[in-house]
Length: 408
Image (tube, rainbow, N blue to C red; front, side, top):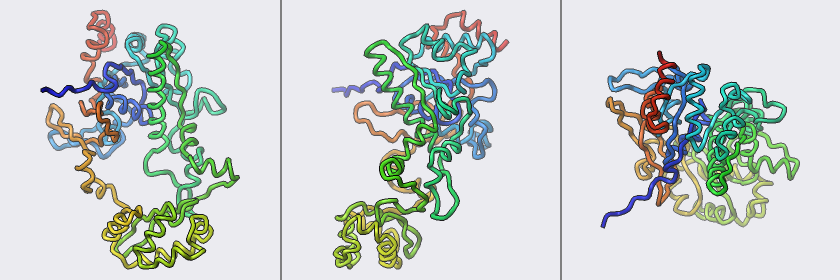
């Protein structure tokens, strides 16, 4: 009996992607991984800004750098098709409006009001297609005191409090090593889009999603935001220490540095037993989470003494076997050498038609019935123009005529 394969979760959903750089493309890549047909609209010739954000650049089939195909661009644009359209050309704007009428979802990250002159803003499009889901990604939102400003991840990390709690105690504020405001905004945008899509399917009513980097960065302060709102505590930088859980940090071992993350009293007792000091868990200074927090310096020093001469990886294995969370501090190269990568199919290798290999970090959610798929590598600028027009606009000659006006 032949096993039936369910269609992708978002099969049949069309997304017109007017976004660039990371937050918007991160969201549309997720939608594409889950089966949506995502059309990425790019500037003719230049394409997405991130195409030039290298080196490193993709090595082409000839082994040479493919300038314009940066690793940064490749990280956020698989499973999409690309069309190159000049917004400023009236025929180009008209073509995009026609494509928008065929889309279920439009996502853009222009400055507030920037698409109105092209008739591609929310109000203009919903007047013609009331069921459209329209996601606007900005630095600071459609309203509020900073709405007119452009925004980047770095600025949002600083304004949103993230940098104030990141870095060594007494040291300089630091941004995260990945554009976390962009990435988390992409995630929240996707969640919001899927909720709006469900509403549109149920009621026929579309809506605009107003999501900003700063809103998202503030939301992602999580417990640190509540420390201020509930307790009036303005969190500072603690390096690798946790503000309320102890011991929960990096420790130096005989051959490097490891993480020990003891989250409750049972784990602390297991650690003490494993290390041959069960009496430590009975010490009134350390026996409870609150006591350990009050006596943070003393218990961290004791843990450091206990592990200082231990080889890291064997200790991690023993801690894990005892139910104590621990792990190495890996370099990125070490991450991709870990057996976890193969066991969990973390990396997918695309082979482009010209023979170039394009690695990609797969969608992390493992859906049992409608898994994410890796269908196509990130596109070259405008390479899918004909297939997009044929699929979305039924190959109508009038649209091809418009394209000829754009590219005489």
